[in-house]
Amino acid sequence: MTAPLMPLVACDHCNLIHRPVAALPHGQFARCTRCGSRLHGAHVHSLDRALALALAAAILFLCVCTFPLMHLDLQGMQARTALPGAMMALYRQNMSALALLTGWAALVAPAAVIASMLYILLPMRMGRVPPGFARVMRGMQFLQSWAMVEVFMLGVVVSLVKLGKVGEVHADVGTGLCAALMLLLTGLSVEFEHRRIWQMHDILRFGRMRDQLSSSQSAAQPDQPLLVCSTCGLICTAHGEHCACPRCNTMLHAGRPQSLSRCLALLLASLLLYFPANLLTMMETTSAFDVQEDTIISGVVYLWQNGSPDLAVIVFVASVVVPLLKILCLGLLLACVKWRWQIPRIQQSRLFALVEFVGKWSMLDLFVIALLSALVDFGPLASVRAGPAAIAFGAVVVLTMLAASAFDPHLIWREPIKKTEGSNG
Image: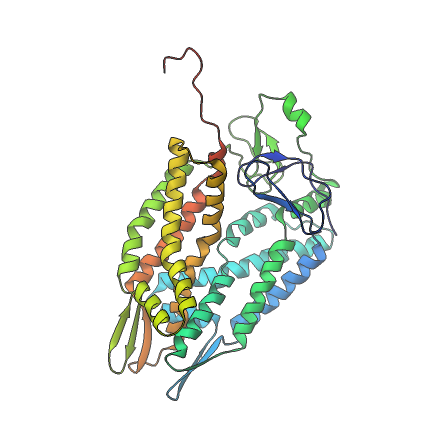
């Protein structure tokens, strides 16, 4: 089951309204004429393929939660851990906040995304719209940015390298299943294209696609501004100050309310926590002879000196550069929007797209700590515990991701208010 393109489509980054190309060559995609963001591609989305991938992802996710990820042999002492065990290790160390954060990103959010897709796709495959369709789609949009299976997979690789210098460590069947799940979710994100799912919803519920404004209508009604629904992408005319989308009942706004102030507050809080996150102890390793306390930087040095410069660079970029980069980039964007700095808008838009892309990768260090804490837990002989910096670092990750979601990229393209002629200033 496939659906044709909608008459009009709005760019997610700048809100410019386009009439999409009906037929694109295979492998190509359309871009926004103003900011260059991707609008849609030539890929033919199939409900059957999306449903098959979602079912396979659900089965694989259950297997990943069941089978062990890796096996450690330390001088005759053996340990294995699965995905839930890594989160429980932090909880047993009285790090409940970290356990909740890592469990949310590696367990709850991916499971909720897969379950939401199955809840939507199964009834639609049988020709019905499930109850609460709009609420589920809205929740899934939020959850997708927090599902971090690919970041957790990189954390498994880093943990294998670190443990290889301590004892004999082997990747178990869960690691291969996690890699397969990562690939399946990537394919599922392509097949489950939100705009086309909403088209299918309209066809099943109304027998046709929901009507949208044409360019002639919008030109004939200049006093009615066009608003784009943030949930379903429907292009509507504004009727009064408080109006809702006629398709999904989401409140329509010309921009995100209090976007700049909320983003600035979150950025300042994350900047204050960034310094203790990098200066305090991130991980504490206890052995029969001594106790070693590592910061983020000392962990990077350890990887570099033990023959893994590539992973050292990855950890340094993900844990040190990326959080600071997000803070600086969002601060620059806030200044550009507030004071209209003379930086090309296309560059500002690309900068925000970069911030959105790299946001989740800062979770890498927290996943590594969770895995090491679960595997190296032999009491006074050998153990790994999360340090106080881990809490500050987790807060930085959450605050910067919330700041990026609070920032309204449409403000980049909003025209400044011009003074009328004859005004006294």
